[in-house]
Image 1 (spheres, rainbow, N blue to C red):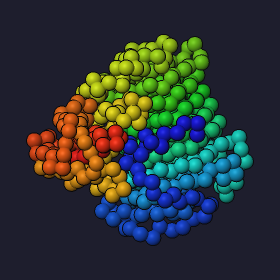
Image 2: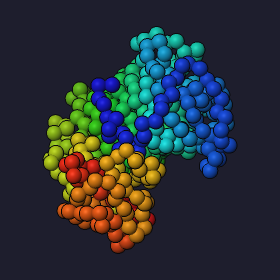
Image 3: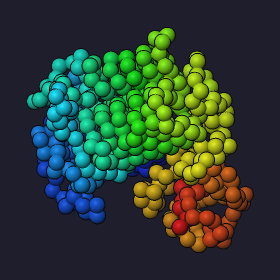
Image 4: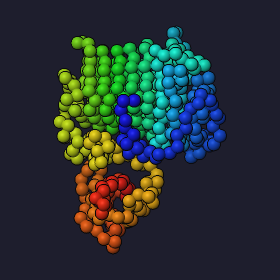
Length: 437
C-alpha cells in the first residue's frame, strides 16, 4: 500500500502491537468457544480464519447463523499474485429464474481491534487457489456476501482488489452490517466499487475508508450504492474516488436510505460528462431518502451538488467542527495528536478497548484507575496537564503540579470519554484517553 496509516489505526481501533499470524495456505479447526455471544468461537490464527472461509465456501454457511466469532490476533493473509484470497461466500447469489444459492456469512465477527492485512485479489494475475473466484455471482472482497443480519465489527482490513466484471470492495461485496471498521484497500473494477461494501449494505456505522476506489459504474468511499434499508451514520472517507457513471465521497447513489453525520476529504472525480458526482453522494434516486448533517473539504470536487456542506480545511480541523458533526450524538472527538491529519476521529472506539491495557510500567506516566468514578491518579514525571472533552474543549488544566497534586478529582464530570494531555519534565507531550463512569 502506498499509504501508511498504522498510527491512525492503533488510535481508532485501540490496537496493540500483538503477534501476527501469517497464513501459509493451510486450515485449522477452531477449537475454543461455543459460538454464543458470551462464549464466542475464538479465531486464534490465520489458519482458523481460513477454516471459517472454507466452511462457508463449501456449503456450510448455515452453520454460522446466530453464531459469534472473536478474532484474538492480527492476521496476515500473505497475499500475492500466486497466493490470492478466495472471498468468503464465493459462488452464492441469485440465479436466472429466481433461484438462490446462499453462501453468505450469517453470524457476528468481532475483530476486537485487530488487523487483517495482505488481502490480495487480482484477476490480471494467475490464480493458485483450489477453486476460482470467478463464479457468475461472486463479489471480490474479504467477504463476497454477508447475510442482511450479519455483523462485522471492530476490524481493520488492508490490501488490494482489482477484478473486472465483479462488484469489488475492501470488506464485503454484498449486504451486511459494519460497525467500527476501517478499510485501507485499493479497489479497481469496471463494475461497482466501494471502500467497505460494494452494494446493498444494511447499516454502516463509525466506519472509515482510506483506500482509493476506481470503478467504471458506481464508485463510493464507504459503499458504491446504498438502498432503501441502508443507514450510513458517523462515517468518513479519506481515499480518492474515481468513477464514470456515478461517484461519491460516501456513496455514489442513495435510494430511500439515510446518510448522516459523515464527512469526506478525499478527491472525487467522474470522467463522463453525463455522470453524477458529489462530494458526499453522487445522486439520490426515488423519494424518502435523507442526507443530513454531512460535510466535505471544499477542494475535493470541481462541481459539487446540493448534498453536503463545503468547508475550509482549517474549519474541518477545528474543535468547532466536532460540535457540528456531533449534532445529535457524541461520537466524534478532536484529533489533538494529529494522528488523522487533524481531521475528526471517533470517540466510541474506546468502548471496546480494554482501558486497563493502556497502563504500561515502561511509559513515562501511568493513569489509573481507568475507567474512573471519583478521581484519577497520575504516576510519573509529569509537570502539567490539560483535560479535554470529546468536543476538544479544555475543561481543566494545571500549569504546575507536584507530588501531592497528582490526584485529579473527576467526580463532577459527566460520564463519558476524556483526553488528558500531559507535559513531562523532559518536555515530552503525551496524550491518554480515560473514561468516567
